[in-house]
Length: 270
Image (cartoon, rainbow, N blue to C red; front, side, top):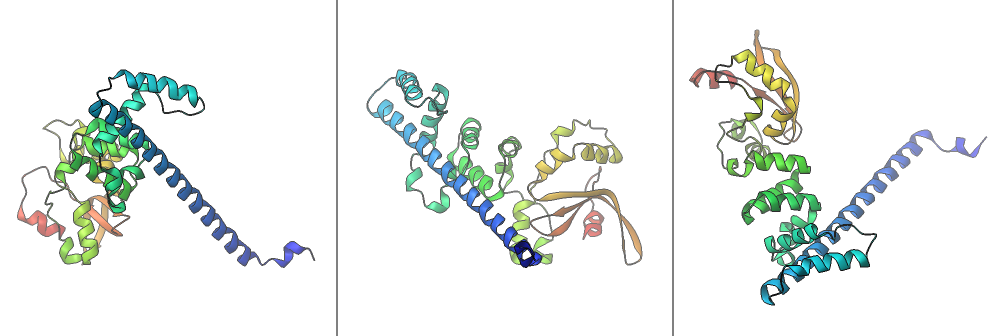
């Protein structure tokens, strides 16, 4: 009997899968730690440039000289270009108190550098930057999704009061999450439809642009189908758009109407 045959298959597979999970977790933690060190290094460099320019009157040429000298000293490292040093200065200016913030609010150093560059390029308000940085960390947004959410004005819509029955039908923790996720209004400019579009045309356009539509809806939506048929109390109903939400762990139905809102529309949905 070989030694390998003495290893129980089930026990070995469990051991292997457990070790693989630990290794992947350690790799991720190491990557996060390296990223945080890099972001803090960039902040410190930017802070040094700011101090010398704003408090000691050094001119803009210091960035050109630093870029050349740092690249000569560290030829194997990227990130010391003139434009990136300018981003470091802007980053330090945007977060002057980064090191003084509670760990729970230090979202900027949890994001990749290109995310931080996007926040600097696209936003002027510190409050907005902090809000989008927090959402990016909490929801794991890629840079492309972050940019899409900024372009859609998600921050300005966060106080929207979409009409839902979540507070009556979901546990409180899920209800709060649902109200956070469901926003109002939605911007569907990517459809490029005219004002005479018909109901079926709207559904076809939404399905054709389902990726953009899911980005606009927010994180967690999975498309299950259109014109989905269900039976309730012996009556067959056709759902315009049918989704499953991965965080709420429930189904979400979207009913499309081309005319003015009527009370029976809400009754039908409830």
